[in-house]
Image (cartoon, rainbow over all chains, first blue to last red; front, side, top):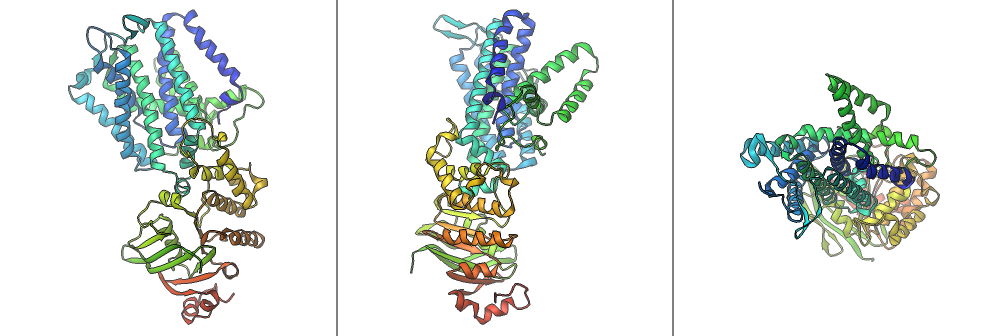
Amino acid sequence: MNALFQKSSKPILALLIVAMVLPIIAPTYYVQFASKAMLMAIVAVSLNLAVGYGGLVSLCHAAFFGLGGYMLGFTSSDSAGASIWLSLPVALFVVAAVAALIGALSLRTRGIYFIMVTLAFGEMLFYFFHDTKIGGGSDGMYIYFKPEIALGDLTLIDLEDARAFYYVALACLVGASLLIRMLVKSPFGHALAAAKGNERRALSLGFPVFWIRLAAFVISATLAGLAGYFSAAQFGFIAPQMLGWHLSATVLVMVVLGGMSSVLGPIFGAIALLGLEEVLKASFEHWKLINGLLIIALVFALPGGLQQMASLLIPKGAAPEPDLQSMPPKEAVPHV
Amino acid sequence: MSEILLKATALEKRYGGLKAVSGVSIDVHRDEVHAVIGPNGAGKSTLINLLSGDAAVTSGAILLRDRDITSMAPQRRAMAGVGRSYQKTTIFADATVFENVRLAAQAHGGQPLRMFGGVAKDGNVNARAQAAIDEVGLTHRSQTIAKSMSHGEQRQLEIAMVLATEPKLILLDEPLAGMGHAEAARMIEIIHRLKDGRAVLLVEHDMDAVFALADRLTVMADGKVIASGDPEHVRNHPDVRQAYLGHEDGVAA
């Protein structure tokens, strides 16, 4: 199912060590940039549960991401940071509830209609925050203090410290990846992939396809909300743009770029896309044009995503086992 | 007479003004193959779809043993004990034979949607999957990707998947379609063994197969049952000869 994790855990371990050491050697700016990239990677990894494993191409995951951020805003005060023990569970619960509602309605449609309906719901949330006074309307709202991770008066982790924040983001990314990996290997994950492979057969075997998809959709959305919560904390600001379809589409590009047939592929997609932007932005005026051309070239060269490149670099035995999850490269692009 | 496992009464299916199935009643007994034949467009596939839940009935009632399954969704009927094959092979084409059948066994295992622990851990599910694969004779193909097998083997796989769901009633929609002679002979043998302890409803055009397998025969034309009963009796029924007149696939095999 996942070559990187199963066949060769050494490269992953090496990457993890690099990620652990990075904040010690890198300047603060890059530590912050890496934190931001890891939070986007969480959205990409979780979106891939719906897109890659479930065949559910969602264009409203930014709305869940943004909603997680707004929930931090609503639970923070102007004088002190919110207590993470209360504010994070509330944020995740609200995101999960909204995702359950949107999912229950969207999952009555299939294929391109599902994409359209999720897009519409995402835009509804965008305009909900953009056109009302809630959350400061189109101006957004400031979050003056980061959430506090404390026991009584004792601060366990100070998120105001960029390096501490980095490690929290890293822990979230590792946790989210392990969770998704556990899910796709479980009977639930196999049933989800079966429904993607042949819905009619999955139903006639007795799988409650609708509920399986809804569960995957809600889990995926909740993890996106988690990333949004910490992103809002990092920027100290939340605005309707964080809910818009543009961000949803960007994350989808990360997933496709990284590779949908593995759990970790989207992480590389997220880091590559954000890294590319960062480098190009500094060097060229029309960086978006070059960025676009490079992405097109990458997708053509590596139809299985960047994780395909990883399996080329890592020799023998790194090829993923052919099973339900590892579709042939041509099919690794969503049929829209 | 053996127990009636499936009892459908006065089934009707209307698509707009068209009556695809009208006033069809059919009983399928345990340990028996009940074949349904008829010219193209007679409503045979629609009947199977009504019984499996893939299509909703306009009126009528379907009882599985004593349980009313008339308005149940397909996945709930599957859990109640209805297994089916489709006219067009319906499998997980990108997965291995074993994974295909394992999924079928998983759906009817203790924790079909467990979210933790890999699938390899469920010994009971794996054993039942392997037994179903052995039963249809695909043991040597266990690790083959389904879509790379021949048409006949894919149909065998579909039967193995149905078996792994441990059904009481098996609905087979033209299981021999598109098969060569040797493949068909093999499939007939498999179907013959399926009826052991189960009820089988078979829709098929191959009359050799039908008369080799059927314990009971129903003939449909224009959405209605025109004759039903013992195969020999039905074969000589005047209405049946009438219905088949002018069709290439004559009933006299």
